[in-house]
Image (cartoon, rainbow, N blue to C red; front, side):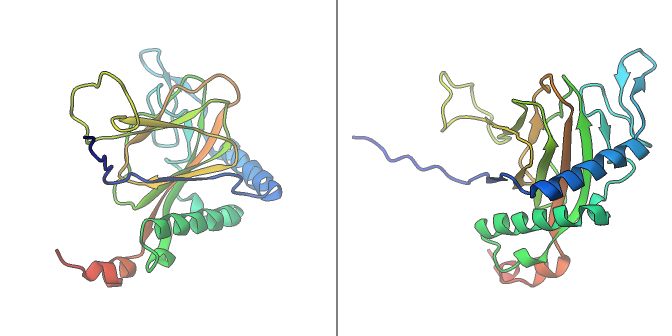
Length: 225
């Protein structure tokens, strides 16, 4: 006799290839690089000699991202130069929300905040999640070959299995590509492996949520347990 295996409680991730047309991609990519050049502070040495990569008003450890707009422009969604990009992101977020069962309220999604960063060789982003958000995402303007975005299962507290497989895996990685958008639920821990050699990574991250009216006035908000 053999049992029937059921896998419960999905952790959804959705990816979109070639989000922007070639023209819009080049336009946004050029503007974003110029935005960094005009505003970002160059890396410098910390007091103990270890590299430190500061933003305006914010410094980061040497193993994390190198230069980010988070300290001086965490609201890239408000820049008109990225309007086409923002519309494309929101359209994909709506599709993702519809798949997750929010088709009656997905029109009320908005970009809560958005920032960009430049990653250097061997830097990485530690595992983290995004609070006060529904959907988070990463879009890659430029990225070295074999750069990975890694998701982890934070609920597993068991013995390490003798053999890893699709049933017991606690980590999934996605190889990232230029002009690719990856969306995920904001409560899923994620980070990156050390960045491979090659070009610098230019990535935009963001958080998306529902406007308050959608949270409290849609049919799902009235369901009691």
